[in-house]
Length: 255
Ligand SMILES: C=C(O[C@@H]1C=C(C(=O)O)C=C[C@H]1O)C(=O)O
Image (tube, rainbow, N blue to C red; front, side):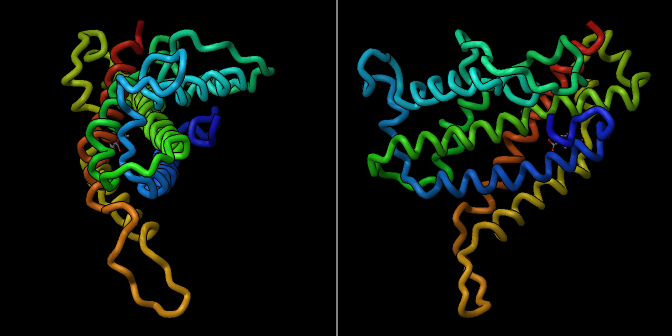
């Protein structure tokens, strides 16, 4: 498991450091996807571009890629969750010894359907230009990188929830027993941290996404991905979905 959630390094501080590092990955993934236009044929339900496969080309590419990655042990890692969990082949490689810090009831939470829907239907149109350049394989590979990075970040809520529970079991136990999701949401929310996260990701999109020239120090005003879209992504989707994972995990924490 990554440094953030390994046994001895399992603190809220180390988990938050991992979330900060994952912001870099997400911003760079979005910048890569922004190189291609919308390419909507890739997502079309009825084009049937692959003989023998019914469904959008992006589904075919993601399902086939996830099958290979499953055989290589990707989903044995408690940080990784597949988008198409049905009928995935088992891992063929010797198990890496991931430290098991999550409670078994929460480990299987998977909200990738909501992440997929948000990414394709709401986020993509906000940061890619209209048009079709036919480069579907590269576009889909880039979509999958974004989806996996977002999924990893959002499902990290499980680790956040586990450490918050361990740090204050007496606060969390009554609302868990009462299955009081609203109270749990209040308890786990830290508005100061959320504000900082949103400010920081906007700044990262500004710093990472500008055209860098070797000849002078002029700062360009053109960004590869609109920084306000990255801030909105976190505000409207990433943070709320992470908190949804946290609540779902906590509700099952004493089962
Ligand atoms: C992830 C955490 O839990 C909540 C979710 C946050 C997020 O998704 O960035 C930030 C603060 C909390 O409201 C945390 O406390 O770090």
